[in-house]
Image 1 (tube, rainbow, N blue to C red):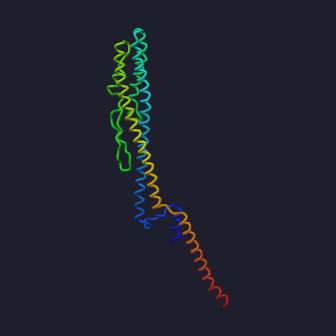
Image 2 (image 1 turned 90 degrees about the vertical axis):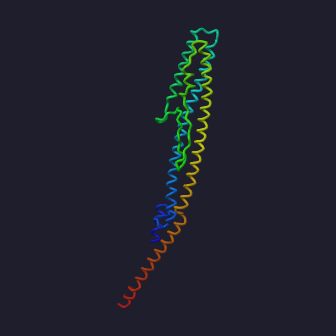
Image 3 (image 1 turned 45 degrees about the horizontal axis):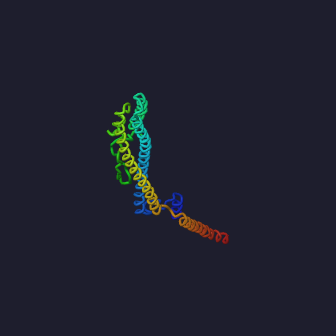
Length: 247
C-alpha cells in the first residue's frame, strides 16, 4: 500500500493523491488554485487595458502633430503679404488635417470606442476590484470648435489660432490623463505578476511532492517489498526441503 501510494505521488507530482492524505492541505490548495486562476484572468484584463491605453496614446500623438501644424497654418494665413488665394491653399491643408482629427475621434479598439467620455472600469485583482480609467473624448467641444475653423481669411485665421491653441491645451491634459492611466495599469500588471508567483510558490509547498524525499521513500518501500517476497519464498522452500529428506 505504501509502495503504491509513493509511486502515485511520484507519477502525479502531487503529495496529496487522495483527500485523506491531507484534508486541510487539499482545501487550502483548492482555494489557492482558484485565486491563482482569477489572478491570471485579472492580469489578462489589465494587459488588454494597457494595450487599449497605448493605442489611444498612439493616436493622440499624431493628433498633437496635426494640431501643431494647424496652428502653424493659422499663423501663416495671417501674413499680410499673402492673398486670399494663398490662404485658400493653406485652408485646404488645414481642413484636411481637421478631417483627420475628426476621423481619429471615431476609432475603436476591439469594438470599444477609444475616445469617449465614458469611464472604463478595469478589473484589477482576483476579488473583482476595479480601477476607473478616465475616458478621453476627442469629440468634445474644444476639439470640434478647432476642427470646424478655417484659415481662408485673416479674421478666420486669427479665430482659428485661438481655437487650435485651446485644443492643444486640452489635448495636453488628455495625454497626461492617458499617461497616468497607463502608468497605473502597468504597475498593477507587475503587482499581479508578483502575486501570481507568490501564490504559486505557496501552493507548491502544500501540494507538490518532494521528489528527492519521495524517491528515497519509494526505494525503501521497494526494498522492503522485495525483501519480504524473498523471505516468503525462502520460508516456502523449507517444507519442500524437509519433504525431500523424508523421501
